[in-house]
Length: 355
Image 1 (cartoon, rainbow, N blue to C red):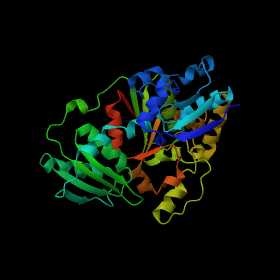
Image 2: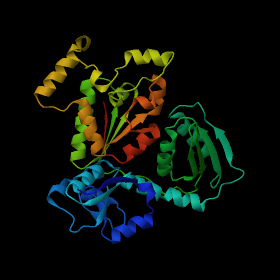
Image 3: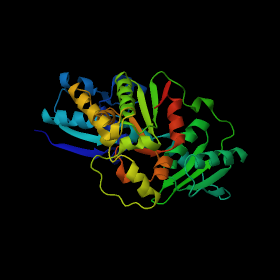
Image 4: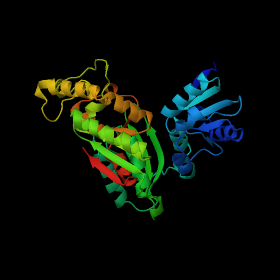
């Protein structure tokens, strides 16, 4: 039996990964269409879907990655079980791409200006910070900078998406336990080629409903779209956040309105009511019984499949704050962001559903 160990992608530089690729040791287990859209130089495409019928040819140590880590974990465990020496690169291509993105280049090239405008958006909820930032930037002269301080932790993702869509430059972006700090430089001519174009390979879903049958529909559609090769994002807002709750959540301290909301919100996805014939919870039990009889996956199982297949799950931070839902109540595999990130995802999608 081979040794199986996990190692973070951030432990490897771009040059180290490319050297592993040159030696034939770097395996990308994403599907071929994903690999062709972008990959680490010299990485060998070895799709997880083909792994049971195809093996590496020699006894090298193989470094395995996918998009974010779920598929490479399975591939690593499978190959280790077959006697191969493997290292799973947690974080995958997404972490590699983010670490080696144009943002890093911009940070090296652009200098922070002493006369930059300082704005504090602390206490403002999504989409307020992005809307306010956009308004301020429009009033600025090209080449000038603005520094913003934001307490909404979804802003860290939103501002990157906003910058990619508008063509303005992020000079510096920092995140602490208390706030997000960003320095933006206004660009004179926004390069329209930078904007993300609509493709036929994307689906976005807004899950607003907190009802079991509607959440099931959202995940069935999402998993089906992913199986068809689409990039899929689900944005969870207000009542839909209940679908992301941990099944065995620890007690989280709440007070005031947060406590009141907690009394009326379902404890876990399994406890969500159904939209028709709920009958004080009896309808939920009947539906789960029938689903089991008909061999239909439960909601938690569908969520697990979505995560396994790299469907992006985004929790709306503004809705979380309004409804008193804490990070520690939700699954660890999800992202926390706001409307700016969701709009960025819809730019890449041909289909957008509201459930």
